[in-house]
Length: 336
Image (cartoon, rainbow, N blue to C red; front, side, top):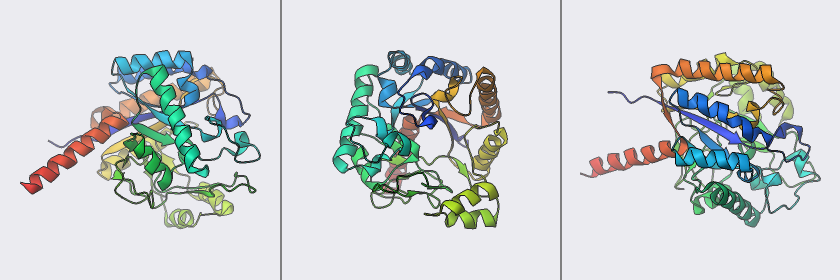
């Protein structure tokens, strides 16, 4: 019997409307996550909640997350916004505006900031996270090595077929110009410290985010040349908008295309991503009011219906454990 691909639901659990870049630290969206969780359970899915320190320190979210963990209804992982995670050491003229990646900071600060988030989750929720996604999809080899030293075994930061040109960075700061993931594998692989878009020997399994390749040759040509060029980055968005497992502005066809692409390409999973703040009216630019939130949830439910009997739910950590177990079984058989 052929094994069904997984449907992995990931939620970046973070402060309200981080898109505003106003330095606010509100976590009111914690009270709205339960609606999403109940919908997932109704369809037999168990989400992975990738959690920032701000949210771990929210009493409302911490109580919710403890219940999820205790009832084994999902997984609590780690997410980090380096610009507002202690210890705070400004890197740009205004970190709340320029939002530096974690790997923009020194190695000591990377380690200390990760320690802070892990301890916040451990203290307030009672679990030690093993899964990770970087803020703004950020990851480099140095960060991956440090994550591995802290017990992280799975990452989902890499977006194949997409380069993120960083036209909004502080030109006066020593920060990364962008994220160049276009040629990263679609299949899961163990990370390399030398290049996180290539397989290596670190114990962290990369679960690349589900992203559909450019539809046409022009779009592909543009995306491969986006590095460091803000104009080409914008042309890419116009010529061939990325399609992925994100539900934004009613793009439900992108979700269907992504599910079909996974099935047709024989990929082992489809990975969905959303921000916790999108569940709250006014919590994101995509959900400014109750009507937009209701439309979002209707779209999520249609995604679950479309997945139907073709996918089976798994968390990030569960998928990693099953992957390693299958690999060990295969190695054992080959050695016998």
